[in-house]
Length: 140
Image (cartoon, rainbow, N blue to C red; front, side, top):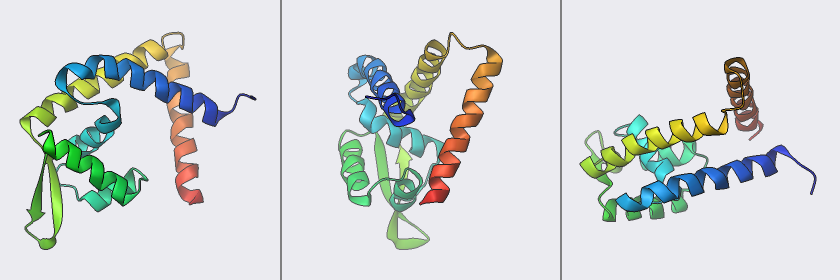
């Protein structure tokens, strides 16, 4: 197979998931659910629909994962006081611990993954990745 950005991103995702899962197992969460914890930690009181849109995920898929997180007591869903038809999401204390750990894991994995890059190369890579994501989001 020819090396493509999509293939490289897939391999990096698998590597990151493996790195995280080994460390997350002890608190009862997988790397697949971690993105929701990270998003809610960064956007307290967000709506599930907003989360799904921002993460470019199917709403049904998001709902199933949020239900899992709520059952495992990582998050709490409440009725939005401004719109009783909608819900808001918050991290529980257990979720806040998972959020803190997720930030540590992301930082340590990135540091390890980019250890052969100079600081300038790391900055350039971050800028280029943002540009790729902006291009992708405008293409939809």
